[in-house]
Length: 143
Image (cartoon, rainbow, N blue to C red; front, side, top):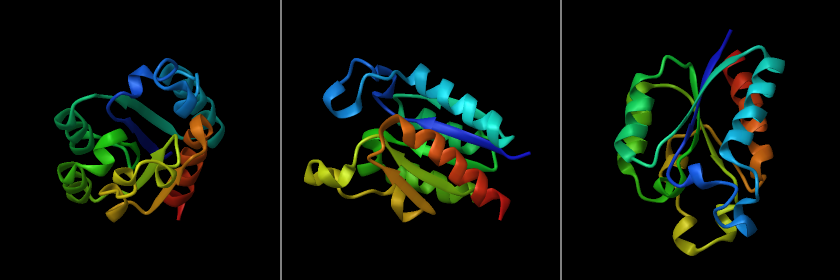
C-alpha cells in the first residue's frame, strides 16, 4: 500500500476566507476530507500537513516516510531554492499542485522552482486538483 504526503505551504490555512475570487470558498479542512475519500478509494494512506514556515515544510519533506509527495508550496513555489533542494535530497517523486493557474496570474508567479524537480504539475483546477493529484501520484508509484 502506497503512502503519500500531501504538503501545503503558506496561507493555505486561510482557504475559505482568503481571496475567494481566486481560491474559492472551500477550506483546507474540506480539502483534507476530499483527500481522505480519494485515498480510501485508491487504497493508499496519506499524511496531510500545512505550514506557513519554510523550514517546517523542509522538515516535513526530510522526515516523511511517504513514498511520494504532493506539494502545494504556495508562494514558496516561486522563491524557495531551499525547498527545491530538500526535494532533491530525499529522492522521492513530487507532484506540484496549485489551486489557481499560476500561468494566468502575475508574472512573478510564472516561474516555479518546484517544477525543476517535480515529475508533473496540476494547476488551475481548484480543490478538485487534490484528489486528481492523489490519483496521479498513486499511479506514478504503481509504475
